Every structure is written in C-alpha cells, then in structure tokens.
Amino acid sequence: MAVKIKKNDVKLSGFFKRIIKHGLFSWVLLMAIWQVGSLSYSDYFLPGPLSVLKGFKQLVENGVLWTDIVVSVERAGRGWFTGIIMAVPLGLLIGHFDKVRWLVEPVLNYFRFVPVLALTSLFLMWFGVLEGSKTALIAYATFFPMLINTIAGVASTDKTLVEAAQCMGASKFKVFFTVIVPSAVPSIFTGIRLGLSGSILCVVAAEMLVSNNGLGYLVYSSRLYYRTNWMFVGIITLGLLGFVADRLISYTGKRLLKQFGVK
Amino acid sequence: MYVELKNINKSFGDYKASDNVSFSIEKGKLIGLLGPSGSGKTTILRILAGLEKQDSGDVYINGELVNNQPSSKREIGFVFQNYGLFPYMTVYDNIAYGLKVQKKNKDFIKTRVTELLNLVGLPGLDGRYPSQLSGGQKQRIAFARALAPNPQLLLLDEPFAAIDAKVRQELRSWLREMISKIGITSIFVTHDQEEAIEVADEIVITNLGRIEQMGSPVEIYKNPQTAFVARFIGNSTIIENYSRLKGFAEVARKDKAVIRPEFVKVFQYGTQEQYTSVLEEGIVINSIFRGNFIELEVDVQGIFIKALWALDEEIIKAGDKVQLLITKLYVFDDKGTYRLINKGLDTSSIFYI
Image 1: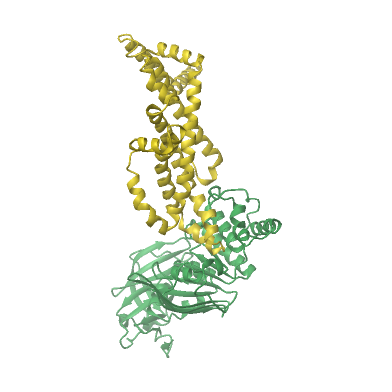
Image 2 (image 1 turned 30 degrees about the vertical axis):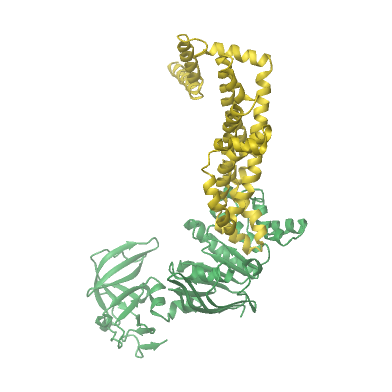
C-alpha cells in the first residue's frame, strides 16, 4: 500500500515538473505580475493583460490584425527570399573560388558594417516608397549572416570527401555540386535561419519608417491614437510570429535535411 | 612493371617527404608501405593517386606516364583512413558515385552495387547512412566504393588505423582474401609491421622520405639491409659492446648490434650441457606475462637482453639466475647490416649480406 502511494507522489511531482519545464508556470506568473502592476498605472501608460486581450479582440474583429500579419509576413518573406537568392550562390562562389574571394571579400567586409537603417532614405529613393525599398532593406539585412554562414560552410568541407570524389573520376564541376554544396548545407541552413529572424526584425523597422500597413505600422501608429493596448497586441504578435517561424523552419530543416547533418 | 616511381622528390617547406624515391611493382601484387609516422609513406601514396604533385620525378601506371594526369583521370581506387564516405548519401549512393560519374545506366549501377555489397559481406545495407554503420562496416563500404568503377590500381591509406584491435585483425585477413580474389594491384600504407607482414606480398620500408628496403616480409625479416630496417623490424633492441658477449668478436668499425628475442635461448641455470663455452649467465630483471608466453628481460654483464619463455615450462621469475645462448646478432654501421653467428655454433661466423 505504502509503496503505491509513494508511486503516485512521484507521478504527481513529475507532472508538475513537466508543467514548470514547459514554461506554463512562468507565463502565468508573468501575467499575474503584469496585471497587478498595471493596476497602478493608466491604461494609456501600461495596459494590463485583460485590456490587451480586449484590444486583441477589437483588432481581430475589424480585420486589421489579420491584414497586418499577412502584409508583414509577405514583406519579410519576400525580402528574406531575395536575400537567400543572392547570398547563398554568392557565398558558394566566394567560399569555393579563391579568386572570387580575393576580389569580393574586401568590399563585403566593409559593407557588412554599414547598418541597414542608414540606407533607408537611399533605398527609398532608389527602389521607391512602395514594396521595392522594403524588400531591398530586408534583403540587405538578411544578406550578410546568410553569406558568411554559406562561406563558412564551404570552408568546412571535409577535404577527404573532395579527394575521394576526385579519385572516383569526378570533374571539378561535379565535385562542387555533389560534395561542396551538400557539405555546406548545415551551415547554409543556419544562415537561412538567422536570416529569417533578421527579416522579421527588419520588417518592423521598415514599416515604422515608411509604410501605412503591417505590424510595424500598427505598433508605431497605435501611439498616435492613444491605443497602447493595440501596441501591445502588435508587439506580442511579432514575438509569436518570430517564434513560430523559427520553430517551423527548424522543424522543416530537421525533416528534410536530416541526411545533411542539420540538427 | 605495372606501377613505377622514378626518382620522386617532394618537399613541404623544409620537410623532405620524398627523397629520390624509386620502386616498381608487378601487376596483381599487394604491397605494404611500412614506416614510422612522418617517414613519407602517405606522401608516396598520394603522389601515386595524383592528390599530391611531386616536385620532380616520374610516375608510371600501366606503362603510361601519368605526371600530368589529375586524380580523376588515373583510374585509381583510394581508401582513406577515415573512410571518406559521403555522410549525406546512403550506402547505395556512395558506392554508386563513381559509376554515376562514368554515366553508367541505372540497371548496370544497381547490379554492380548489389554485387559489391555481397562481395564485402554487407548485403542489404544499401539504404543506410554512414552514421548508422560501425567502423568496420564503414571501411568495407569505402572499399566497395573504391572498387566500384573498376580501377586499375587500389590505394589504401592506413585502412585499419581507426578501427579497434579485434575488428582490425579480422579485417586484415578479409582484405587479403578480397584483394587476391579480385586480383587488383594494391598498395597500402601502414605503420604497423605486424599488419604489413601479415597482409602484404611485398613490403617497402620507408624512413625519412627514403626507401630503405623492398622485399618479401620473410626476406626483410631475415636479411635487413640497413641499420634502420634491422632496428625497425621485429622486437629489436640495440646493444653496444657486443664483443663482451661470448662467441662474438667485434667487427671493425661496427660497435652496435641488434638483437631480437628469437636469437636468444634461455635455460634454467645448470640445465644446459651443450655449448657451455659460449653460454652466458644472467639475472632475470623482468618477467612479463604476454598472454601466450612470458617475455624475460635478462641482465648479462650489464647488457639487457630480451628473450621469450614458453608458458608450458616452469615459470621463471624476476631475480632468477638463468643461462642464455645467443645464437646470432645483426651488427651494423651506416653502410649496412651484417649477420654475426655465435662462434661456438658455427665456424664461418660472418655473412655479408
């Protein structure tokens, strides 16, 4: 009998442990502190969770939130994708061909340190006030982490694999596509993942500066209407968006690229 | 000659990896390149494969000068120490790689891969990834992959170095069998003399980028031509002042000698009645159990001599007094090695090799 009770105890504590581990407890605690804290301030300065929930309901009902999510995701996605298309092939070339590296690397090493926001006005002028400039900004912001990771991936290729392929008669071209590129996949993937979080970061900045829709615009403009709870809705949504996107890509990578060593 | 190296020189900075290396190999032979690490054996293999370019000298494979041929044109199979399997490809795709490069048709590739998997004794593993294989399995797959495109020469760089001792033993005899079955000319690199002796038809001994000696394992064991080979092969110890030992007179200018345990017969004190004039007395300093025999270290007038003692005889312990009969020594100088037979055993005591 006694043993049985003890067993149940263990089970129960295991259950709690799991809840705490999954962060539910932390979130409940945070909400409670937030709610209590918000009581001593005006709704304009610090809205409580309930007020934010109310704002969330409003924004869902009038369709603004959904539209803004779609717009922002589209923008981030377009910029990110453009970044991938430019960074990955260039990174493969720089990593593989010394001559390309000697030519391009000095310039890239400088531009890496030009902050993307400094380019906003220039890009507005060059690519227009509509989507073009935003895509360009996001692509620029995601370009470097992806490029550098791709180069690193190529550099980390096991030399033995290249030699093995050569001995089996593979041409340089064949070696590039069957050894160098696959060996760089895990690193490229890391770059793409970093690029994704970078694109979400940048889309907010771009929308705050030059836009009349999107989540960044929602956060920015809510202040003008004294709707701080809407601002919170935007912030929370952005956080969720980044989190979900990262989980999604990490899961996809694990599923599709497992044999390349993506973890 | 099927494979020929002529006056190969190769330096990496100050380090001379190949110093005027020349040797040739008959078709169908299994050759072991044996030497201590840093002796240039892997460099020779890599030059043969075209993975390294010699500074000077010629390489011929099957009568053709291949100096300017890249690896991809030399038709060689190369088995790497760390397998070099493509981790992102299945076993099937790994073995099929060379065949796909040759643009063979799918049915042919399928038949050939299956045939090779059977040959290396791993049928049905075609869907696995290298990470799902043991070290021994990986090396067998690497071997199958190297053979798939039907190379004219198989090169193996320390093929068993990364594999644990027991499996290594198995793989050695397996490799020997496999290669004689296929009949492909093969060269493997090893630093393990036991491995070279067991596997190779002929051994090439390298030291400091030079070839010291080439010959069958028995020949090299029995007639070491240089001081290095005499010391390197067998469980050899070097002794000085060998003329203090009974039955050995000093040969001019050769003051050092190599002795191996098998040159020494040990007797329990007072049990030996023959050759008493050349028997040495000694005290056992060390008696080490080696599994199927005992290795003794005996102090004979300050000279330490290793000897073997069979287990079925009465055990000899450290501190015991024994008598030794030293049958021969290899005395050496820079020019060569000479076999010196104990005078008490033979009248014509010096053989010039």
